[in-house]
Image 1 (cartoon, rainbow, N blue to C red):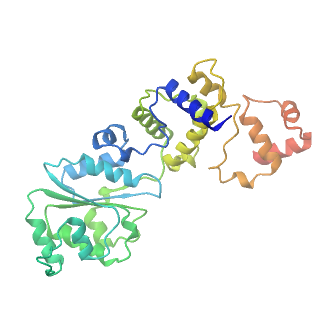
Image 2 (image 1 turned 30 degrees about the vertical axis):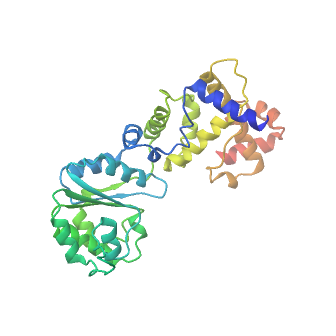
Image 3 (image 1 turned 90 degrees about the horizontal axis):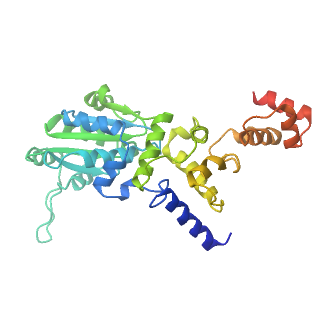
Length: 323
C-alpha cells in the first residue's frame, strides 16, 4: 500500500467509527479544563479532592511510573474551585526554600535593581497566613527531591499555616520522613499499582467518548486477551496494543460494517508480543504453537501438527512444557 493510501485509509477508518481522532494517542491534558474533567477517569484523584474538600491537611498518591499520577494531579488542580482555593502546581519538587518561594510566587521582587532580603521559612509563613483562601500546593514527582531537608520545610508549613494544604505524588513513600507521613495520615495515602479489567475498560470508553465515539468497537474476547496482568499495570501498555489494532485494520476491504471487521480481524492479524516479557523465554516451537492456537477457536492435536508442520513428539512436548 502506498504511503498516501495509508493516511487515506486511516481517515476513512476513523470516519466510519465516528471518531474525530485516534483516542489511544490522545493526551487529555492537552485539552481545556472542562474537556479534561469530562473525559478523564479519576479513581483515586476523586478521593483526594473529597479529602481536601473536608479539610485534610495533605494527601499522598503513590504508584509506579506510567500509572497516571501526573494526570491525577491535574484532575485535583482543575477540580478545586478557585473561589475557595489558591492553587499551585509544582511539576518537580523545589530543592531550596528560595526555589520553593518562587514556585509559590512569594519571592521578594527587586526594586530599581536592588535585590531584597531572600525569603526564608518565617517570611513564607507570614505571607501565606495573609491569604484569604486555602492554599493547595501540589508537588508532582516528589520522590525526585534530592535535598531531603525540604521535606521538613513542607512539614513546617503544614504545621505553621492553618490554611495550607499539600498534595504529593511519588513512586513510593520510602524517602518521606516519618514525621511528615504521620502529619499526612495513613488514611490520606492513596496507592495505584495496577488496574482491574473493568477499570481499564472504563478508561478506554472515556477515551473513545473524548473523540466522539459512544462504544468500544472491539470484540469482548479480544479485549480480554489484551487486558493481561502485565498490560493492566498502566493504560499506556493497553493503548499501545489497541493502537496496533487500529493500524492492522488499514487496508481491510470495507465490504461490511467496521465494527464487524474489528471483531473478525482478531484471528487474522499477527500476535503482538511487545509487552509479554515471558515471550523471549519460549522455544521456537512453543512460540509457533501459541501463535497458532491464539488465531483459532480451538484445535485437535492432529490439526495443530498439520498447521505448524511440527512433528507429533515436538508438539506434544511443547504443549506439556507450556502447561
